[in-house]
Picture 1 (spheres, rainbow, N blue to C red):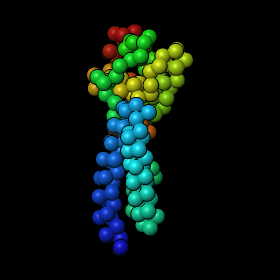
Picture 2 (cartoon, rainbow, N blue to C red):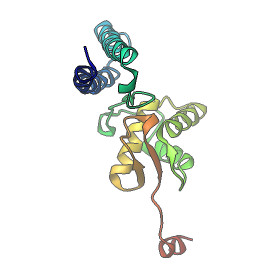
Picture 3 (cartoon, helix red, strand yellow):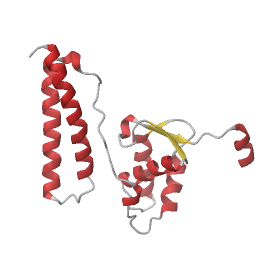
Picture 4 (tube, rainbow, N blue to C red):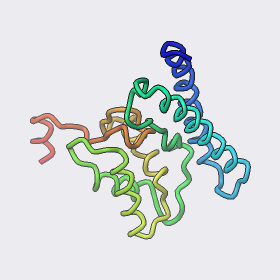
Length: 170
């Protein structure tokens, strides 16, 4: 195999890797005790990592990034059922206590909100917080950069207020 052939194969593998990441993220919505889902996750990880690793070991110049941008969650807010006693208002309050007017990595925001939820005794998962953050971005309450499903490769911040709006809210 020469460099051109390896590059062509890489294009197909990257497309497949994104599709596999979508599938793996979807399996996270299934119960942990679902043996078929666990097997599927293992196969996806193995195919994804072994195929790309083999190609990049032989053709290291083809590696376009230091780390593959993995999808962490595809959970949508409309699919979330909050465990009692947590409410949507509780989740929003936690999120808005963490998010600032400066860009923050989605991974950090999700981690801090989940820890805060645990401290308050809520059984709200990191994926539930991430889904709510995505909804708040879609609603216009928060701003984002990047694909929020890829927590380490996206950022969020409070919606920036203009000087006039900030004075009115003061």
